[in-house]
Image (cartoon, rainbow over all chains, first blue to last red; front, side, top):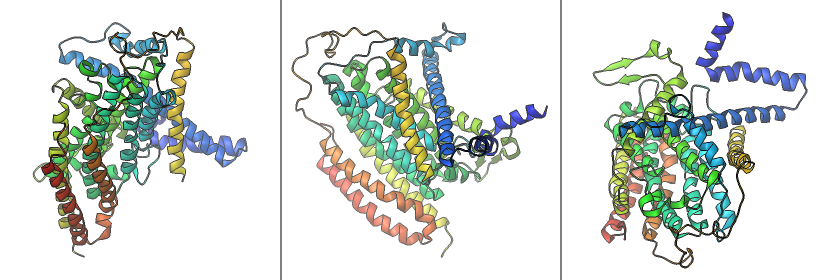
Length: 379
Length: 119
């Protein structure tokens, strides 16, 4: 009975379990019993965390691809994958196995080193971002004090991988796709950064974990007033564009550029781009949840007239469940976008960014600054 | 420092992930290279000329403006972080107001000159 309770508590607070039980146990085993140096202990800890994260990434990518196809199917009044495994759940595994059996083709004229590095960079850049995503209180790989800046910087590396893939393929379609996407992504690096800045200004910290903690009294979406809503909308639009999802999926507009930058990639190399894209979708949605929806905090709605707190109830669901629920809600919205809006033209895309989103987000940032300044006590 | 150790480790793990995937598929994928297979895809037509040629990069101006605004965002990050901690909101507001005002003028200028149009 006690063991069952213990296991339940571990499931509810995996972060506490890792810090209070697993870590000291491992430390005793490695350092006290086997007499290994502290450094070895640290490395083993990192290895374990890394392997857990890798598993999580693979599983959630598989799940996201399945979810995408199912959601898409229901939007089109189809059933979607339903043959392989129960409810077609194993469809993605089957697809992955199929991709693994594909011959690894590299064009003879390709710029070989760059061609080989591009998918590695795409995957690594997305994987590195996951290190600062707070899944729960204590459940974060490393709480960098420059968290959001780090995310902005590292996810910006993704554009390089697309540009490299486009260039190295020595083919006109990927080159045009890569060029287009470079213009597209560098434009849309700015607009997500400014709403992030307004949240940073409001909470006064760059650390992702502290931003979530600051929302204990209410989500930023509402706590920042109308500016919060505007910032959230700009962030959502711009990050949809930043991760190349429809209606902004110009880099791989298949009717114009075949498969865009990934035309010449086959088998596993192609699937790395594909995986990175889905992990990016997870990251963007997680960022949205962290910045505006209170991350792992339970539902707290704090408005002038309405005050709704799930304080005592909030503990009913563990923090990571709140976080994942919010993240997947945003992911669903992103998939919804895809089947609702037609693809925009390149000139419309640029107009949206430079003439609409950028001025709006600048004005919004200024308004948030004024609001924070007014709310501060006179020195 | 340990925090950034994790970052370095994740960099390493990202590479391991890709290498692992490629290694796993290495054992089950066929290898029958041929000249036709290693030519590039151009809808089944013999490719005409190479891909690495000069062509109009319609994004040149956009790239220039981007650099300006991206650097400016980098300047905004420390400002936003210490805004509350500084304790002098009016000073911070005025200074950033001047900074943003100049940038807004720049954007307006680029807009008037038509640099934001896609050609």
